[in-house]
Length: 205
Image (cartoon, rainbow, N blue to C red):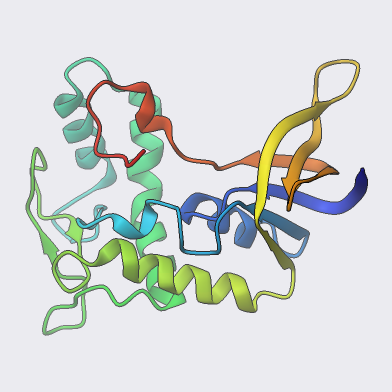
């Protein structure tokens, strides 16, 4: 069995969450494991809507969080909704800096639309309904050119490696039918698929 000791952060999954995490750990090294080639097999690129964030002068993260909590009808963790709403505007701006071509108005500001249970126009889009693909393209370009990121395609997670106290110390992966043991100081699981926990979901199998 091959054994690898990675001097950095190990990320399992190369969708939007996994690649964003890998970019965020700089200047530490990031090793990204993905079963499919980058931008294949993840559902991030299939997202057709946009990103909801309080980007306009008549909006605020607190209003966004309140709308989210109300729409959740008792199922929303208020503290998490507040964090999501607070960090949303910077996330959109950061993605735009990476090259995601969000629609703009005549003044160069983000063009936002009013949707669903939002009380303000706050959904930033790309050419109407192409946000997912455009965002992923921008993030992938950035990740592939980042000197601190190494991507290993064709690696499937088979298990987690734990120490005597039960703390995760790495993963057991399979590559071309061979098992590979990879240890790291930190391991991030960004494998997606949480929609499968629900009877009704738009997440693909």
